[in-house]
Every structure is written in structure tokens, then in C-alpha cells.
Length: 266
Image (cartoon, rainbow, N blue to C red; front, side, top):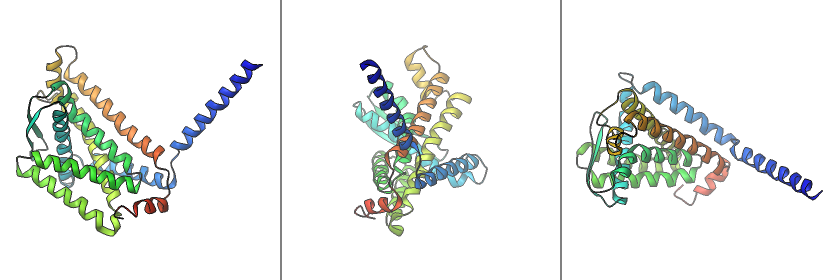
């Protein structure tokens, strides 16, 4: 009887774990609103992305995500003992990070994967008011580092402009809009990485892309297309993980969230 009893206890414990996991991932009313907003943001971004006139609206945000892409190259370069010489963003929504030294095996994929991770973190934090305020500080720090390495006025303008937006939204109506701004930047950064990886690395096969350089560095083991698909999948996992972790970690209702944020400049 002992083995049967132990097995029964195992089944009960496993069912309890499954029920707890289901409860953690079941969205609250506030989380349902955030999920709807994520869906609306995603649809709007994809709709406006390449529309001749409407895409101008997204242009500053695209340039910001380019900045986060280049910042990711630079910060991993620093971690691998590289000397960062400059970061530049151009009006055609491209960018370049110039560095000496470092480990190319780490710095080359860092642009796509790093900015995807930043986007996922911002999406995750948007499920909670206090967390979104902390995330805005994190975003501001990323922009400050980008400003430090910036060597052209467009890069400086994007950095100063969005730092100003963060400060403005922090104090406007007790920061009520900051949460949705952080969420939009998170969705935008995640979608930009996914779109850019597919567009530049998979379909158009841009020969000077990060994936092309990485494929050359690795030899003939995999093509740039394969690396592009792999990075695309990892970026997609980051985005979904950000949503799931946000659902599981932040279950407070709106009143509790406001109370939590009240001592943090709310």
C-alpha cells in the first residue's frame, strides 16, 4: 500500500502544481486590458510599418529601436573588453557601432538579441505600474549610454528627445501615461527585431548584415539565412516569455499597484 499511497500523493502534488501554474497565467482584469493593448499596438505597428505617409509616425520610434540595437552591440562590446569608438544612427533607419577589440562571436548577435531582450523586459514590466516606472529608468540609462557614444546629431537628438519624453510622462498626471509608453516601446522593439531579422536577413539577404558577418566568422557551418531564422526564433521566444512572466509575476489590482507606486514619484 505504501507505494500506491506515495503515487497518489505524487498525483495530487502534480495536479496542485499544474493548477497553481494555470492560476498564475490566467490574466486578471487589468492584465486583460494590457493584453488587448499589446494586440492593438501590434496591429497598428504592422499596419503603419510601410504605409507611405503613416509610417512617418513610427519613424522616431524605429530610430529609437535602432539605437537600442546599437546600444546592445556596444554594451556587449564593453563586457568583452572592447573600446567603443562611436554609435551612429542614420535617417534611413540604419545604424553602426564602431569598436576596437571585443569578441565578435558575442558582439555580432548582441544587436538583435540584446534589443529583443530589452523589448521583452519592457513588455514584462508594463504589467505593473511600479515596474514600468523602474523600466523607464532602465530605458533612460540605455539612452544615456547611447548619448555618451553618439557621434552624430541624429543619434543625440533621438537620445535627448526620448529622455525628455520619459521625464515629461513621469510627471504628467502622476505618470499615468508612462506605463503605456514603456509598453509601446517594448512591443516596438520586439517587433522591429523580428521584422528586421526577417526582412534584412531572410528575405532580402542583406550581405552586410550582422548575420552575414557572423556566418563568415563561423565559416561554412551555417548560412546567414539560417542564423537569421535562429535569431528570429530566439527573439520571438523573448517576446512571448516577456508576456508570460508579466502575467505570472504581477497579479496586483490597479488600486494596489497605485499604492505600490505612490512612494516612487507617483
